[in-house]
Length: 372
Image (tube, rainbow, N blue to C red; front, side):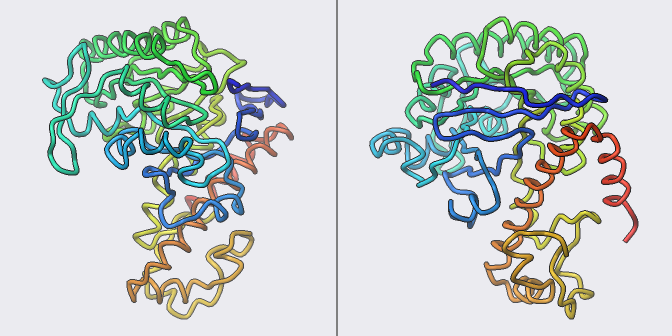
């Protein structure tokens, strides 16, 4: 079965929308934040913990699973769901972002991308067809087209050539996609150029994908204004009856701004990455629990948070774990940070239902950015 998107409620004062996406492994409401399980594992967490924090869909990485353990190994056990013991929906990215971080512009050709493995330096070559073949075998619910991720600093000529090649790659990938139970998303690129975003969106939609994502907004160097503009330039040309996914975005305010502009799905490594460095999201902004002021703070990270960490442990204890270099600290902070972003999307859905998302945004930002 291909995924199906159903609109439940459109906000009266913005492009925000509350919907539901049906997949072969269950349904989930949108807007939704996807935890990232790069190597078929959301770092330090098990599926039961993800389910407890209402995580519906997670993301895994095609490039990394191609190298280890290999798509054939995953296929032999019955696909990614069985391999990682996760019975909910899974999205696999195309591997493009990792490839382009390893490749030089001269290594990108019409055929694909030549680069070296980050594991052992072996020479590798990834094509649109190979990326789709890997994802077909991983058997995720949603696969992503193989695209080029041009840097934010790319000039107009480079960006135009890049998106035209990405469109050709998208068609090549779609032509070989043969997993009837897997949906395929196209990716809109174009940097900060309005006409290129429009061109990319229109041409990608002409290829008729099952959903659409907006890429190139979470690479190094983009301003917030460029990110929001990229969404505004793309959304008007994307179908209303299919999901819209903003790739690589996980800052709370960026999620709110994306939802208001019509985005349904988000993913980012941020919640687990900052957790490993002792940081936590709160409604009053990010905090670093390594700070001395938390040494005798016997309150939870956030008083009204329903996550396992906040209902069982104090800032003082987590700080002790961090200072002692105990791995449990990263686990507990990851649980809280992922639940924080998922709860944020739940609250955004309620705000859409009540037609007060603009008021929600104003109140959230005022509190989140206040001086501590």
